[in-house]
Image 1 (cartoon, rainbow, N blue to C red):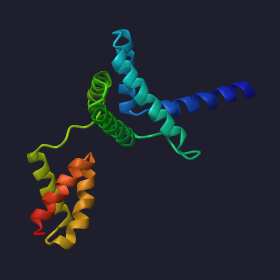
Image 2: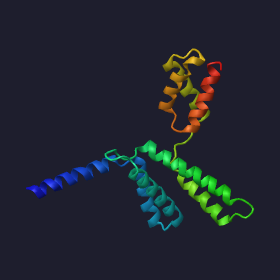
Image 3: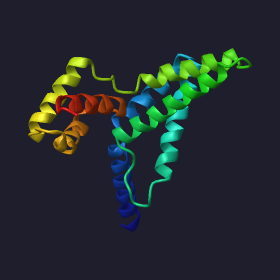
Image 4: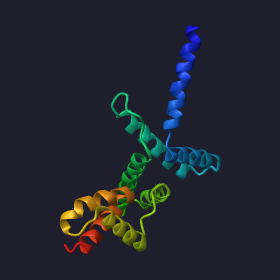
Amino acid sequence: MQASGRRLRALDVVGRLTMQQTNVRGRLRADLKAAVRAQDSARAATLRLVLAAIDDAEADLPEGEAGLDDTAVQDLIRRLHCHCEEAAGAAGGVDGDPQVRELRRAERAVLAEYLPEPMNETEMVQAVEQALGAAQARSIRDLGRTMAELRKVCTNAEDLARARREARRRLGA
């Protein structure tokens, strides 16, 4: 009786863990399997790096806190993407190793596949117009409420910065 109770609790924990798996993480794992099967060692190594970074970030979470959600995973991937960009730039110097530079560029290309596409100009204008309407913004003093609305729509920091500039322009600042 007691052993089956433990098994049920264990299954419940496993069930909750699999439900917490994010869509991005599931896609990363599936793509890792495909890269290993295709014997694409560079892609597989990059995906292993990302999955290990996710596991490390989750290990640093406080006790009892759920795993990383899609947004947190994409932020982590974005940081890795920037790191690869900086490393490729450092390797591009006079004494830089062209193989390292090419490897970092390949890693950046793989990581870019998991980042959301930036908003185009028409999407940006529509998002700002909707945010201004939802916040009932009339002057620059309403920029805070407008930004709160824009944070719901903009998926990355670059889009949010562009939206802020557009909102400020429209509000006359």
